[in-house]
Image 1 (cartoon, rainbow, N blue to C red):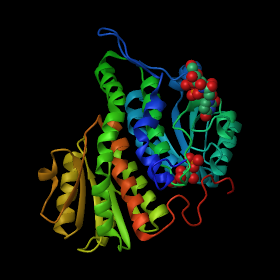
Image 2 (image 1 turned 180 degrees about the vertical axis):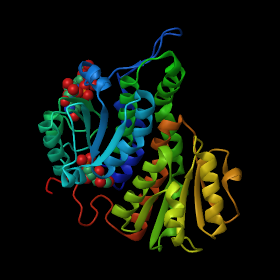
Image 3 (image 1 turned 45 degrees about the horizontal axis):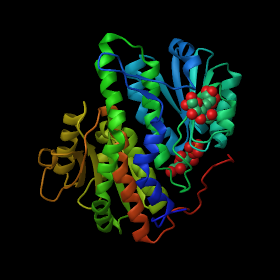
Image 4 (image 1 turned 60 degrees about the vertical axis):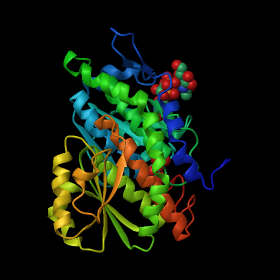
Length: 371
Ligand code: UD1
Ligand code: F6R
């Protein structure tokens, strides 16, 4: 039932304040004024010791689920101190990459049925790793075959393009970082800030969804383009990949997410006065580096669309012709949840305006159960 919406993708984008609330329900424990706040993930509690002792955490997934893990990787590394590596399921299988007993392998999948992810799970089980699932589907193959895991509880996702599952996956993996990370005094303030940020996240998502009309206007400008680049780094490298994936899969427009730190190693050659480029430059530890990326793209006459934190428009925009998308600022590790939303809206409106099928893009299936 689409309710007041025309498409499931649209409904699922706008439902994110509620889906995130459900994802976090019962899992954030708010202590009294003196008591520390904490996170409870019932599905992991019996295995936390093993996870904390592992030599490495390996995230494994495909498509959007892989991107969600990439968005959560920095906070997991920061809070746990454990090396975190990333594997696209098919590539792990192609390489038959080493997986050890001392590894924790985390399988991220909305459907819980993706063939490559499931085969990678079998492979990791045979190699003796602790296998953890993060899935939206209770009773799915991945939920059943992993040793333990967390259901993201985002509710049924019908649109082929994953939207609300992506933001709920990031929220779950941020909570996972909080429960795995040790509770040292030195990290207490940081942890509390993230928990407060999670509690307030649905409100901030509601705020960023108000950009709907602005994204529709932007889509009108971009309707006839051949290509769109999205530059991000740090926490928002994943946002660049995910924004580009949405544009590509539903709007059927070529789009590429680019790690801004790689700009001078090739992508800069593409920049001219015609190619539209989205640069994600919200406030975090990478902000000044992104300001310099904007300057360099501007110097090559790049057609810039800058995503920045509210109030930063004048400090990030190099010229009148630069368009801005101002988003609410949240705790740095949660910012990918906010930043992806204008890009989801942009992909949605581009698709409608270009006259393509929103909920069932050509050649794609909701769950890829064959290799
Ligand atoms: C569970 C209940 C929830 C109830 C809550 C109350 C289920 C599905 N969840 O939620 O309805 O409100 O307790 O305390 O009954 N698992 C895997 N692999 C996965 C995902 C999950 O093995 O990919 C396992 C978990 O380790 C856990 C079980 O499935 O044993 C349920 O996981 P989850 O729903 O995340 O647990 P709770 O949040 O505790
Ligand atoms: C993109 C998309 C796909 C899926 C991928 C993995 O919007 O939906 O890239 O993310 O097929 O699917 P799951 O998460 O079900 O394993």
